[in-house]
Image (cartoon, rainbow, N blue to C red; front, side, top):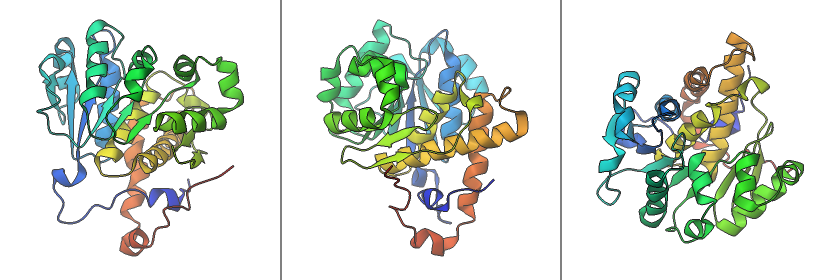
Length: 294
């Protein structure tokens, strides 16, 4: 499988004198009693895509099962999390969170308090759709949202059919109006920035249309935010790597049998090609070569 070197060149270099702080601390918030797997997939993908440390803030009821599956992550009960005291580089919020009162209270408090780059997905978006004024009034910081057409319909009150008919246009208008990078998921996912740049992704396959794949994407984008990429670059690299990982998984298991955790694991295989770039490729990368204006 061939990879797009211009997009992979966006990946941050891994200096020889690095330590875990070099690659950021990602705060992952999500999961619930009946959906612990969403948080596990998000954190697994974040670790596989290079975050120096993954801090999982989860409902206390799922901490034991999470800790047994993800020993590389640091955990904290969500009920004890104090955003103003917690040190993190970027955040990923929403997968498997549910829409109960505790989840809603956290999301709206997060939007008021957080001043770090973040990616918002899944139930985080469904909660925001009930009070877009809170999203508009959030603190100024880089933001990525990753809706599928159903979630975008709830955010915009547009019918899903209108959204799928004009994926690029809807993504670009929302990005500009709400000052957020929009990853509007589709067979050819669109990434739109508030300043009008957009990218249409070409990686991925129908086998990825399975519950949990989006949680993996959230973890990958969050990891790249934590490592210092801009919101647009993190989103472009994230959707490309996520789709390429899905293609590698399909080669191994076939499209019927891909599991989301296998996509997360194949992310590491895609990013292995970044290790082979060499210093000259890193220094001479063209940051605009990946922007496809279609």
